[in-house]
Amino acid sequence: MTLSLSSPVQAGQMVSLNHRYIEAILFVDAPTATADRPVEIRVALRDGRTLVFTAYTPAALIRAMGSASQLSVVDAALMIVLRVTPDAIIDALDQMLVIGIERFGLPV
Picture 1 (cartoon, helix red, strand yellow):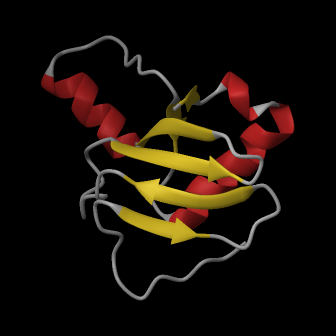
Picture 2 (tube, rainbow, N blue to C red):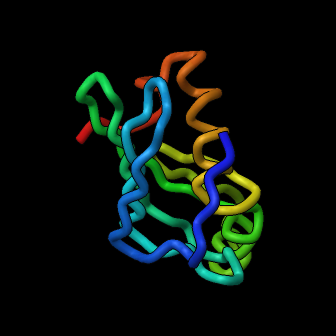
Picture 3 (cartoon, one colour):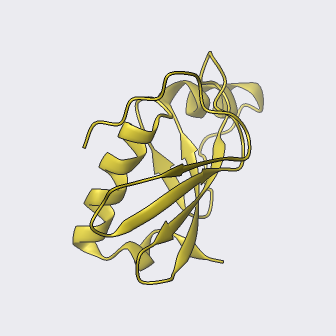
């Protein structure tokens, strides 16, 4: 599913979807231009559940590990995407839905 947004995603922006299982994605945090910080998102499913995820790009993981000399990154509801965009998030969610999304997200 390709979703084109004419402007960058803003903090607090709700993206409604025409998706079989996903109703909307709320970007709690705005993705940064350099993609070096994690972004909290909330996902509303059509069955009424809402799940929270933290989306990381590879740059955000490197920054988190490098700035604190960490050997690992552990975060509840961790989602790793190439870019924090609706398309990338939908791709990750589609994979989670096949396996069982409740194994990945935190319920709200």
